[in-house]
Image (cartoon, rainbow, N blue to C red; front, side):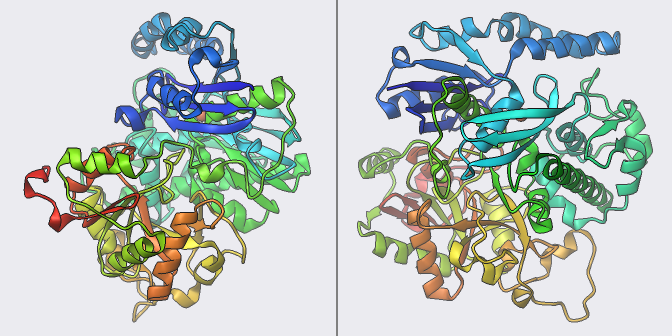
Length: 600
Ligand SMILES: [Fe+2]
């Protein structure tokens, strides 16, 4: 038996992954255990969970890998400082103590975090190698092109190459400071959202605006080549030397200061969001066409933070540049932990790769699971009231009825998802046909901005009837945006479109709760192989209503990580206006809970 632990840490989204004889036994992000969103500390709790899942201890590990090379990263930090001196002095002094105390002594830090029980040497792969490995090795392809795009690793900000059999080889890189991830983050910052977490909001905001600054961005901010590579004019950005993302010159170019976080969003920032989204899509498309041309491959694997831009992914699919695409669901840095572990197993130890269908990611359901007893104990401990519905069929019918009744249902079942999306195991569900559902869930359950769209989970076999996917098209990890089928849309009487957030109030389709203002939707397709319970549940909802899809949003409130345990779920249930909670085979109604359990 060979046990390999992969770790990503000390930047954002720390995670641990355990492979036993090449099989992914467990994978989880540290934030889910510590309840600190994007937790960047050493993933002690995630490591402990992975080992427990396999019944191993740290001394049983054969290899431990880390997802990037800290010395190369430090070199970048120093060179950037020298290049920009003396302007970068503040950011330099801010980051240097952490490097001197922790990051440059990673083996020591990791050894102590593993309780001193691991005596062998650590393996370090390059950041983009880890992303690339996580994109290719679990994919269903024998051979494929690999494209990675993110903010920055050591020096690389994008890379591409080929995966074949049990090996990957990256042949091209784009280097810091020129970075699609950082460019997008700079606009995230300018629009008043948080860097490294608000990018999703920017993408959600984009369809409300017009891309009227697109040409300005392409003319002034970057020199974009036909092959998708580009150079940024760094006088508009401040992330090299300063503590902010954009410079005064950037604000002068657009004619407005950065939006104050949490302030009202006016049309100007919507137009800015639409413009950078459009430029991002253009860069993603050019890169992908170039990768297709140079590698000659028919399939594409994607990873890195930018691969979470599911609108861009949808454009790549739509253009048909590759025959098939597979995107790593944990495309953020958490996925690097999976990449390094698989890199060690296949590339360094030369173990063959058995291609699994539909893929080797097991639906990304790789985290902790809680049985009936654990759920019952949690309910009892919290002073809640539940009842049990043992038969799965009966339970699915009951939940489907609740959803069809307009209730908002929190669902915890099976193993927790690995990656930022909830896929039906830690999800909040609602009726997509409801006109008020989007507002209701945003404002009363998630406590977040009303413009944020919701995604549908649709039965795989019915997806093409509702969305413009080709029959059989997969999107099991909710990483592709597509359009509603025209037949499902409702047109407003005079065809006129209001501007800005007013567009939110127009029912656009038969399923308004998941139809974004541009008639798009970020679709998860559910198949019975990867998500069996969820498939059965949505099948029941479809049979009941004729609508084989539900609203699926992650089970958390704004600013908190997705729930992990039944205790987390109960707390979230009681602190929001959620109506129903399902904890495996236990069901709980809000009206039956003691009012003393209601949390502010
Ligand atoms: Fe990354």
